[in-house]
Length: 108
Image (cartoon, rainbow, N blue to C red):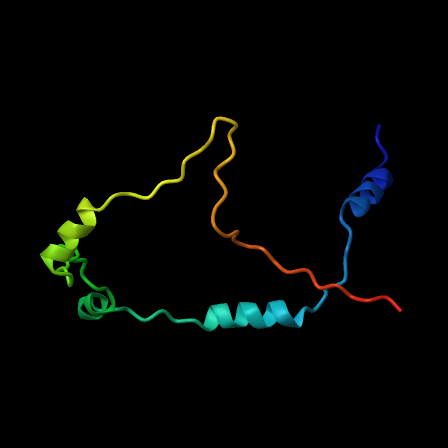
């Protein structure tokens, strides 16, 4: 029924031979992986490598460098505020902040 020649030709076509490519980097990498020998770590070495967790100390209230009289005077002082007119603009201050003097250059 079937010709044996056709089968042998078809089987030859299924398998193709590719030339082996040498890759120096991958060969060195595989060589180093094969040469690696892991060293067992003792329990004492593991304990020395890891620091035990400790909760931080509670925070202390800083001592006030100001005398209590100065602190009570500051707390009782009045707060300075700026009043706003009905039009929405504030009352002009005595001097303006961020005012830059413009330099005038004379043109020839």
